[in-house]
Image (cartoon, rainbow, N blue to C red; front, side):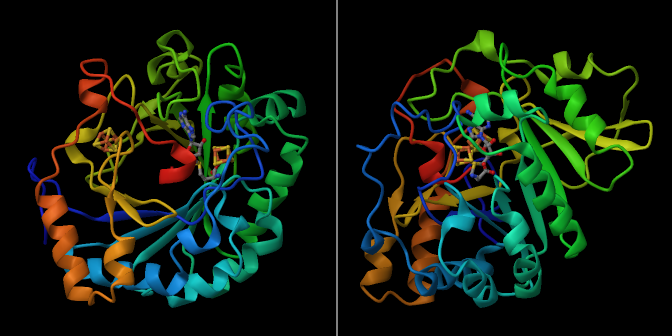
Length: 323
Ligand code: SAM
Ligand code: SF4
Ligand code: SF4
């Protein structure tokens, strides 16, 4: 098993399957930056499914146990189920999606071997949903997707980003919507990812502020090391808070990311990645890919969230690197 300079293993690989998206969430891909003039990656720049599967297989001897498919919007990538079938089924296979296309794909995703899906849903009311996502889509479409995913046997979580002045009321509304179901809602603090989302600390509603919006919460123990959400019981309903701004969890961060164009990033807030595509396209063996990743990981010292504000640098966009 490989460990980085802070003794953290490499357990979780997040793959950005595409830098494209069918929404334009203001906090992620603001339309004024991601407009018709924006140059998305060309097909030949994006790693093929065969190339990605080779990377995944190469990392298993290093300790990889979980793969999350993300983006951009992963369900926009053609034949995604074909790719899921190519992945080693002993891995925990998860996806993060905005849910717009989930109703259509759920059964095929489950049949292909996907275990879990995290669906992003920032509001239950149409007006807020459309404002947050800068979209004409409606939350009902996502809710139908969630229902279809549950029926198909996928484990479903909901991720809700809370941003001051936009959707504080979603904290209660989203939890209430899933009372009595097995869907766990997790609230995410608005983060300073990328360069374009006009982040500022005043717009962060911290986990603690959100927790105060509920009458009674009982803390739960972490499920496993590297758990990103602080979990609570609200009656019999489990909810969680991903407090990466107010309570950073870099100390146990075991996540690597591959951008759609095949660069390996060791932190969500990195300014650059290491080019694996060139290596793969030189017909490197799995052992050679593993050696390259081992060498990158053993030098890893990232802890951006813990050191936030101490040094500013240019950060890669989240839709590119994979959320
Ligand atoms: N398009 C898919 C989706 O929205 O679920 C997958 C990619 S998206 C980049 C992954 C996750 O990152 C989503 O849950 C989204 O809400 C979250 N996210 C994006 N920008 C964020 C920000 N500035 N702060 C907190 N979470 C953010
Ligand atoms: Fe698209 Fe997901 Fe980013 Fe929203 S958060 S713009 S759905 S990639
Ligand atoms: Fe991991 Fe970087 Fe996030 Fe810290 S800031 S938890 S190192 S991705």
